[in-house]
Image (tube, rainbow, N blue to C red):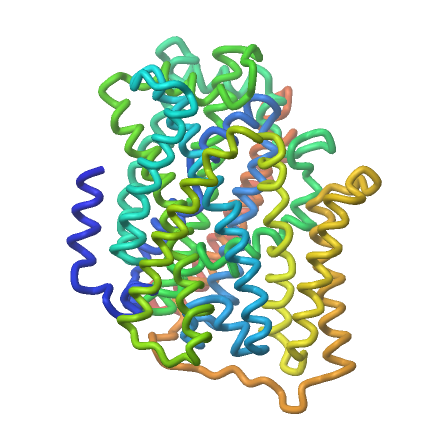
Length: 552
């Protein structure tokens, strides 16, 4: 952890005193840092424990949130990122102000800041602290009671993570994320390998055979209506939830906005998509292994991964595992903190001053905002312990208040020219009211899965904006203004790689289905046929792409 901190400081010294340097890493991030930061920003202790617990208690259906996100990264690389970089935007609300007006910008900032400050940042701190306490018995090690140990863990994690965001800006966040990401990949691969060896009584091959033949229903990703993630949801609301997260959520897209070129940004985003394909193997297969080793006896499914990690890792790896786990928590926390401060400085403070604020003042205000938000989150996070059921319910549904209207407004804004700001404002109000009624008033009456509700709301909100555009169109069509801040030449392998990534998504669902691993008869002929077809299609696409690119 000391090494990560030193490298982050060394790489950022003297480069974070101006606007672009602090908020966008000087528009100089390469593909490696973009991919590494996206990986760690997205994955945290909550996924390590939660996804493995879901696989232990149910099956592989919850991989949908991770695997289908790869499709959203394709949309980001090919559709959204070229437009964001061409406009040289620093924040998503800045784009909304450019496309619509400052009123839409203010409304979106309010939604983002409330979500980050009251829910997302405290929940990341809380879930990360709980994970550390479960895996390393912090009360036993420190001699503190549970609640004081929780508060201490929250403060230690929060202060350490805040140092990166406050002092180093986005560049320090991206560098630390990438180094910690390497550790997460090592641990993520090591635990299932050690688990299969343990399952096979010291023989990896025998453990793999046991995993794929005993209880094959645990390897089924085609979720039923009673599973945590029904299969049908990936074709409805999950599409738009993932598009929001990977294409419009400020704390995720900010490192892509700092890309030094479009080609580097596309490489980084698509690489993160391939990392998402690895998540089921790193963060769900261990849960299935735990089921084989321990049976269904745990009091809660979230105990499966901590027990497995404690039993499998030798003592000399425990410290490395702790550093990786904390690194994953730091990443999500400091990314959220950096983005919240960016939104406040650029979309609240600067507009309030008429935009006449020098870079030094903006950076100073962002640092002050980071400290205030961090201190506030230290206060809120431990409170989740005292009202866990109620607050976790709020956490689960709160994102639904701003994810769907945001992606609807951005898509309509990008692909239409005459829809006015009035349409976006009506949609935001409509969504907040309608979604609030569905979740809090008519929750017992409306039995439709909340992810399906996302899809219906998205369709309704796009229709509202188009209707307003037809009723009161802009007198002068909006024109996209290109600002040549970075090289906008597209990476020549972006599209063939996108096809390959999409094929991997399809192939993964074929693998974890009754056609293959979840079949009582093992691999089927149909799986081999479909898999072979995917390979042939990809080879053909890459052959054509290589010939056009002149690389043989």
